[in-house]
Length: 231
Image (cartoon, rainbow, N blue to C red; front, side):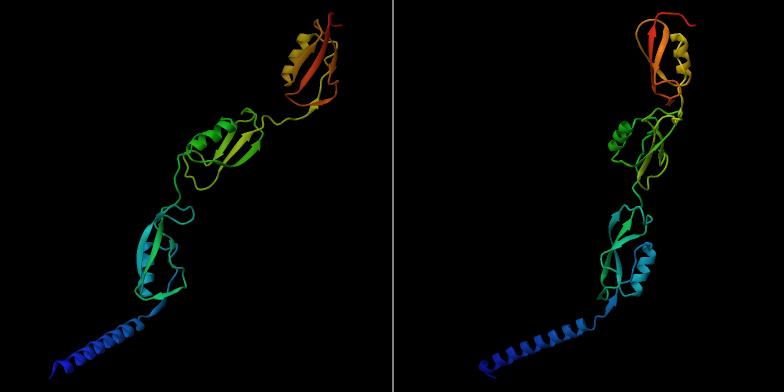
């Protein structure tokens, strides 16, 4: 056979082989099934792997992340949403929950609100809610209680209860007139009133507020003095 005939035949054979390989590749790819991706969030790795294998897919762990709602060791999220259709034998990437991030919570009791906020900022935390309450034992403006406590796991916002001081119950102001300054100061101290004076002497001639006026602990009564004796 001459070379002029052999070259076209070889070329035709190569073209034919190329077409055959292309056809076979197309057939193989076309036979690959499409499957539906199952929901694997909130599953353990074992459960997720089993569910994906049944669907003709396989599991691939992409990483871990903190989360307050999904238990540590369970699937937090998957790269292909449940219900989507993909080719069989595809890897479904998942992120596994590490559970809530654990912080060291400082003791805030008896701190001022400003000091409590500063202590939390140093830990990368902040106050989520402030509740004002009356307290007979904790000074006004200081923290009465906190939630969670320092020995508890942080799973949500930090709440602090801040003192408003004693519950101010109104009562009638006593009559300090015609009393000695010493007696007036003693009576005022017993009921939680502060005293400011005007004039000189040790004898009370007038007062503000007037006797019988409603006052509360912590209020100030103003006394006018003059020289004299108690009658």
